[in-house]
Image 1 (cartoon, helix red, strand yellow):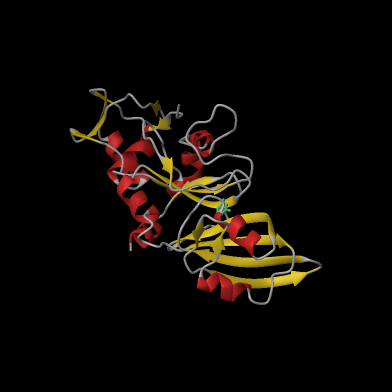
Image 2: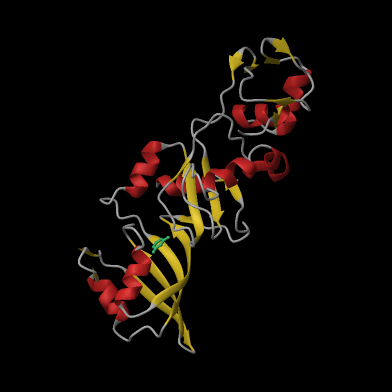
Length: 253
Ligand code: URA
């Protein structure tokens, strides 16, 4: 269950006005909570409270878009009987963090966000969560070929023809031939290779399986971008924030 949120913060966010303007609207008696005028924005409201500004119901933005820096050890699910989920992380940071985080804080309320695609339990990095099913579909549709860029550390030296094989489309076991992908070698040292890999599809364990095909095993994997959305390196593993308006526009472009 999401935590409560300060009234002035809620009014500002849901009406798309500054916190200062929200406070001014409150002090002028323009805001009602469950029908009663409330002038002090310090109080907290919860999911079930009905808030109006000038008589109009304030529902927050139509959709919520969150960037999570997924840490290793949590699963990309909304619920799991055993492991901590990405949704647990998102819930923990709702609302109270919003007050501290300013623009990029968020209030989950009754919203049901879900992860757009999956990262393995041991994979870190960019995970988008939203309740915008249409956008999720656009990003995940195999027909759209949205680029996903990963940083991977591999045990083994990447063979000389690896980038060419990735570009041609690697046969993965008996299962499928991968779409053409990019492999850029960043470094090779003492039997450890570091690479950037760009995929345009998202099959189960795909990076790991493709690397296995070239004789290397993934020991560390991190997604750094999806389409035009790049992981904010200021966001520490486990931390989540709302996308900025620019990021949302880029994602939809
Ligand atoms: N490929 C993988 O093997 N694992 C991930 O988590 C993502 C892509």
